[in-house]
Image (tube, rainbow over all chains, first blue to last red; front, top):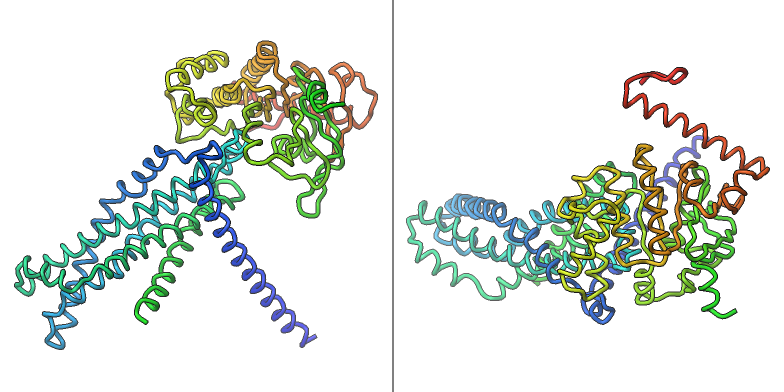
Length: 271
Length: 276
């Protein structure tokens, strides 16, 4: 009896781990299948007499990109200034404040802009995508599309995916500019460096490769946010409570995926 | 018999349909048909399988075994393009209406035209107005679905379902959640549509009065099997005890629903019914 209890607890734990592992693999399979279907409809849709509508893509670009400009700009400026304040403070310990521009520009362009923009878009548009799809699922709107002969992936997912892939790097580039500008304001104020000198040092510190590093990551984040939002939205069960659950799950998973991908990117790029 | 002859005889033909959700068998060998220009009403209690049967007729679920032929096409064997072609010939009004909340009523109704035809915007607008007039919603095309009442949503859904002039119209619980007056108007509308457009109509409902009013034939489902298929008179006069129990229970339910409806309207508690 005393042996049976711990054994069954271990068994239960193993079962839970096994079940969760299978779910995770299943979910990755869903992502892959969805990505495959999206690519299929993007290129073969016109041949199947179901082209992806440009107007839907532009509408999504407005939602995902243009309407996010104020918040991305605000947070990017904050991050840029925060990096400048912290950088100057830390480097002053070693008397190396003059090197702060080097640190700021690389941190912003390679890491922070893509990361902060990805997290913002995941919270804003990834959650909206999951909520929209799950509500449509519950209201039988997805079924309605199917019986009208309109493939839901082509109609709902592909426009969002294209818009996300275009707009997330674009927002990241905007974030680069705003963060560098805000950092420059603080550096000029604190160290008495002119704006011209600051921008000259920034351009010297950066290469095209650094820019592509950040923008490339943003494109990968865009794919992750869309797939996670769609897979969660489509898996909804249980009415309004279910919509809340999948929306939260989509945001948590997307942010986790972004941070982990960023770490893997950083590791690979520095080898 | 050739395929053409089959499709002339039946708009829908279901043979030996079996389906499971997990381990549970939901439909247990359904044989069922709908004739051209016929209104077939599918009835049954909760869990009898009527909604599942509807989903199979619409190819939204895959069967364990058996076949579903719609307009002579085995829907399980259709490719994406053939399925899209078939979808132009059927219309569906879902229980919730399933209107797209981000589109106006007019855009909702136009969607099948915009997706499946190359008509210009002006022609689509005219066709939309015509269908809205058929369902008594003319002038509502610029409103959002959230601005419509329950009955109006159902009628807008019907307008969208008939925009392509389908050969078969499916209505899932058309009068669910509506007051008796609006429900009766919808019944009249379904009858008018059949007479005007000569389409086959499949209605899933649990409203006995509505079923007796509109049906040419009624299929009674019970625990995943067909209990009886027959005309209204055949169903009413059947001596099948199980079926009469089901029908009798529905009549009682409808009386209770009417009382509750009256109570909500007037605040008067009908004798024998619990207070709110």
